Image (cartoon, rainbow, N blue to C red; front, side, top):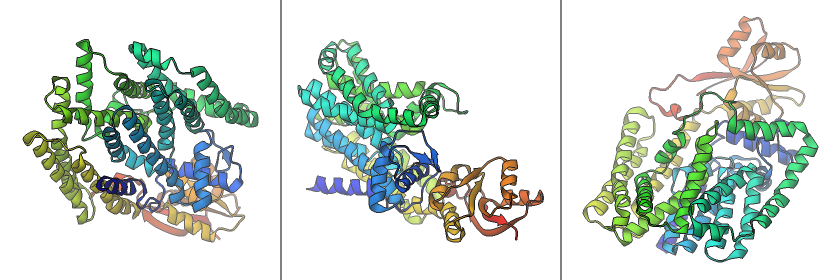
Length: 543
């Protein structure tokens, strides 16, 4: 009962508590939410549109699921984020089931708790984009096919293929790539896995994936022809992976850094497990099939996105379930035999968990008192992390005892996430004004008035969502001057400095509303010595 109650509180705080209170973070989640809002408003549930233009970034399934939530709860932040949050819950449940089926109930529960408590889940489950949904589909499909092969339950492969097809309908053929590469890597290094995995009906599986996923792609091609090929196939897949569309991309070590930081305080434990497995392989020992598959899943995903020329931190999130299963398995193995030579380096990694928490806690205390502008109550974060680190260090290094579940560590993370929801989110919201500007326009613009924004950049999707009507996004000064001087009624949002420049050029403009806020709604908003606030104005043609 205590475990169930603790898990329920953890799930509620991490995934659902105050889920809909923050306005949209720019630009991605607002872009997805606006695309879905237009899907619901137009009734065109097959072809995503953004600002009334075809949007070829991703397939339609995520928007359809998000649209279903908006039908129930309205076009709100809560509705837009509900599907990612529910998908994260499904992903954690899948991890528990997979761990319990392949290892033990205790290890499965531990892996699920660690996954829910990880920063990646906390961030992505509260962000209205598709990564948790996509990961739930592809990892669920991989888990079902793995159990089908390794546990002699062949019927499970068929729902696994269906989930992979749903992954294709969420993010495209990448779902097949991310499921196929780990299996290919695994069968290349293990004869036993080769025999078991190749015993599945992959031909039928591919037919199921094609039968379920292909109709949408065919429909989009027949409807939009070469525009769909150029926009989706070439721009959003091939050129994004192999081209150079975006400058200043991270280097080769980017995802290794992301995993090292994002997996804290378990980074040392996982590195130790990897070293122990490599040492065992060098000695001629064979890793069991599950261990091989978990590492193959992680290595294939990280390697694939490392080779891509375009990188975002959350792209490697599908590796998280496998990594936390490895972490849970390592915790259980070390607890069962702390002094086994087989787990020597893992033991060293475990010894670092407590000290890492102390270091993180002290660092948080420094930033809270010296660098960040947050309420005093936020001091509970460094206190909780530091105390947890001290207790864990004493238990592991002095008393040499391990509990069945790392209650103290997970509880400290729970305190961190609750504090972020209570203190950090509202502090950031104080300086976000795009929704206020859009609200003013909604209440004053007439049906025939044109709506525009000038050089709002990352703000454009949020403004478009909150204003709820077609918006002209102006970037070029000459184009903007022509729009502003055309004589047709309009409302345009821009920075005060841009307004002054247009007036100096002789464009007749009048300020209707003016707000002060941060240009970038990022962590810089919380710095004590932050950048000065910018002024934003709503303008129209002078009367």
